[in-house]
Length: 492
Image 1 (cartoon, rainbow, N blue to C red):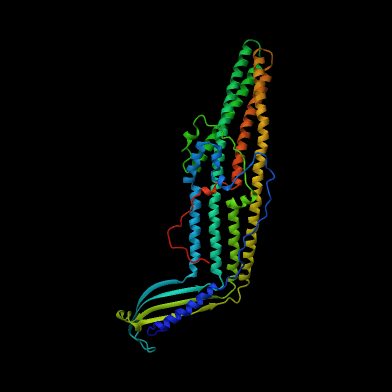
Image 2 (image 1 turned 90 degrees about the vertical axis):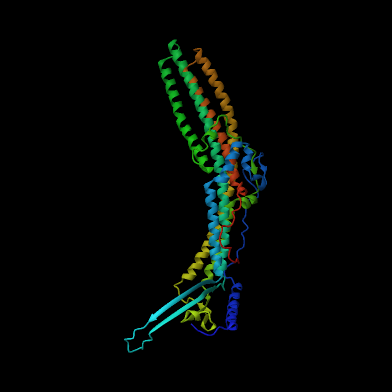
């Protein structure tokens, strides 16, 4: 290290040269600049009926309120406040922001401070070199290193990290969209399962009454023991339907408890209170295909990942160019502690270092090829995500319209089967018909009522799936504040 009396003009000139070198970092950025894609989309939906209404994004924010179920509203409010998946997504966003700040810090110098105190005693038993006895050295100073981003590798890395932060933020919104849909769907399935359990219980009661009727008919010589045995078997089969439905009610109750941020049994009493019914499916909302591209968080996340991958091409290209750095050292060195703070003890050094890889076996070139392939894969993933989104909307619409037609037939079937059961039971009670007619009518009534409830559930879940496919609800997520720590580094 060069030692010289401190001269502010010399050191200032050296710093000025370093500043000029660092100014070069703003001149060039290799790699392609990102241009947002303009994806193609169909002009409208194929599966669109007369009942669909045009909905604006703002109207889709609180879409679950269209079901007019106060308990569902409260459950979703609890989930927005306490769901663990949402909390995890928020922490991942904070992690991504901190990692972005780590990358941005490369644009500035790294400065460290230190001090040493050395004592040395040389051997005096050597002829050569002659011993110098004892010596002491003290040093205080600062060391700095500044890697110059002349070709923009670090700035491209920051650009990529910024896009990744945006993508993870949209992932957080996608978690919210899925949470809302899953909670509403589980709630609807719970209400439908409770209704199916009641239908099955009614069927057990009806079959038990029929069993007693067959026993009475046998005692009066109007029936046979075979009919009694058949009635008992039918009753036992109907009773076997109840436990799986009860288990499904418990499973859905547990799932809703966890989705709202609690434990499985936290909402048992509220969810099993008497009188609750399956929510009625509201009028269908439909937006334009271009709105789906804009509103769905997973599509926006895919676009941001394409931007991040595009910036990585610049990072890989910059690795093919020379790398420059400015090492700087400033401190005081003396043999006596009291001399450390004199101008004569000041020593400094500054340099401009440059390195260029001459041969790496094709590693840097392969890195560029890999980055280009990654960017193209991200672009294709973005386009595929758009196509999948359109398919999900069309599938939901097709399901809703199909169930609507099915429900009309099932409503008629329930009415006809109940009428047939009433007539068959009356004829059998009067000895004018066989038990088989009653059994067939009872089976038909149960199947029709159960199928109708399943159809109503499918229609409600189809509407929920449509809201999810439209990307509805993500605006309910509050912004995540910057975590405590150093401010973000300089951006591009």
